[in-house]
Image (tube, rainbow, N blue to C red; front, side):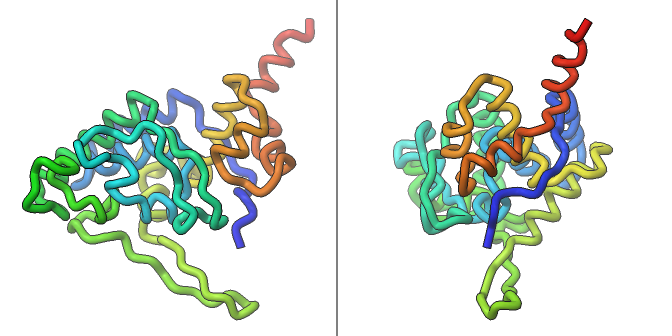
Length: 223
């Protein structure tokens, strides 16, 4: 069962920009990797959810972005739908660039170029380097329950941070950073909870507790 996210570091904006810049200049899947990082830090989505997003979760049939989408209940880590906003211009620009690459590389395209920008709307939004869906690993918990995790995508996030020199960076770090960023903008814990889907307000408060920038600001104003 997923209980939120373990306490991890917060990646500052300049570090995120650096990681994106490195991803844009490194590897065989630059457009996809830039989009993955941007979406992780811009939406707080988990790797499993990210791997299960469909093209139709981002695009409407006419090719326009669905600005107010959702993490569907069937793909959400907790089985509950929550809002997924594609309102950030930088997130949209990164995903659009990747989808343009996908079309040029002929990864999951259709014979109807006028619909969904020529992409198969039922295909995953993000694909592995060979154009196939990301694979999920099946596990059986000690209690006998079956779970699936997208370890391949989790590893991509880890690699993208490591190559940028962010040793402890991961998709979990991006998720906490998203929550802390919302908190810094003045959003209430209740709204943050709605956007990231954690189980309780206390879980949100644990995620945003110890914000290094906020604590530094407090200390700087002591005398």
